[in-house]
Amino acid sequence: MATESSEGEEEGKITGGNKHLVIEDDLREMGKKAAWSVSSCKPGNGVSSLRDDNLDTYWQSDGAQPHLVNIQFQKKVKLQLVVLYVDFKLDESYTPSKISIRAGDGFHNLKEIKTMELVKPTGWVYLSLSGNDPRETFVNTFMLQIAVLSNHLNGRDTHVRQIKVYGPRQNPFPNQPFQFTSREFITYSSVR
Image 1 (cartoon, rainbow, N blue to C red):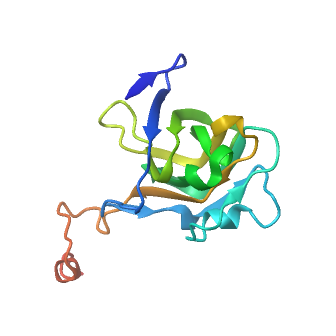
Image 2 (cartoon, rainbow, N blue to C red):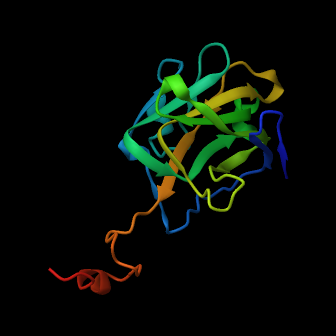
């Protein structure tokens, strides 16, 4: 259920969420290669709470909206999926209701690529970065910014429990036309 906004970005509504994180085998988590920062946080609820794989901890912003999570990479990476864990039942007015995803080379040239509206989400929420064109399956970028534009019940600060960023898994042998999956085939796939 996606609609076009006035500036051409894709805006969609997401309801619910998944209790369990399910990711396709052809994707890998890219967040370990990035430097993470946030616009503000309460003491003890900083950026480390977003990456600790613990659903009981959370990042809590402290200040005026929009609340920002910045994910910066040393080299240009291909990103395909952003996954957030939010819980409306526990966090109520702290739960994000409108999220913007921006990409670019740095803070100076971020461009909004997607805006999503979350309706009382509980669990893992999947935000695809692919465009309207079927050939646009990923975003090639140095920096990704997730902006929480508004919260449920007009809340001021926000809680996000986990964020994971996924990109396509690279073929270990770029000149090899086949995608081998077993260890034995990969071992003998190239001649030395």
